[in-house]
Image 1 (cartoon, one colour):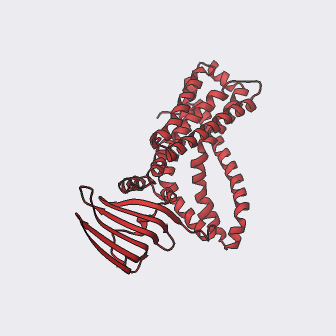
Image 2 (tube, one colour):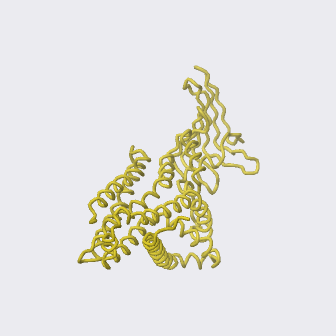
Image 3 (tube, helix red, strand yellow):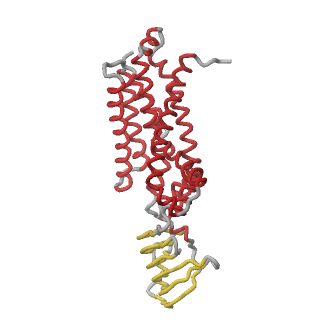
Length: 362
């Protein structure tokens, strides 16, 4: 049986224990502030204590871990490695003949454990948690919130284009609705329009008010108009759901199917969905990158000790977060590819980690 070396167990234990300590400490602080902010909503809407704890805050923790996990890894790595350097433990390990690269092995093992955990949590646990969070928020926090989507354009099938000025999720109704059907050669053959359509959940039909139906055959046009009409359309209320928030409730398999469908429809939410998918797949790399940057900065013994290391480290960490946010904005509001928007910060700071490790004192 292969035994895990004592020095590796020592560093890995410090790595994981310090990370959990920082994570629990910050989560307690954040939950305390969140409770004080939402207490009026909880009391005013009679939220049960059991649901507040187990349905809201228990599902809030995985999201918090996913968002700020790399930052906590970075701070905890800085903290305990700086203390080891201050106690000359790093010098003693190097003096015993163990190379600097060898010291990095338990750090890498710890980062891989956390990265694997966040990969599973981010792709499958958090989407399910978000479902419970949304149910709780709609029932006890955002009780008067109405969902409206505006300026919708999408395809329901090849050659069938749907548009609406606004869509009300609560009423399942669309205003200024229009459905155009095109022939394979691109000619308009059919147009259905209405001032308002509302979905009838009993009969699975649409009730159209101010209904107009035009059909085109070359230079010929037929016209039908009615104040009220019952329509059998290849549409459901889900087809109008353009909320990016719903993307967060899909696991990665469902998200990939959603991207394919919305790409066919020409939906504007495709970029948001792709960003979400690539972040779930690539963001676990941040645990490894921030770990190595933290080791490279804090393994040198300095006069300022932990304070200097924290000042440098926190500046780099927030630079990483700001860079990630900037790339996301460029992808959403510009023509920046979503995959590159997620990869570029990881690649840039990954190169920085390699450079810092190369020049770290050995």
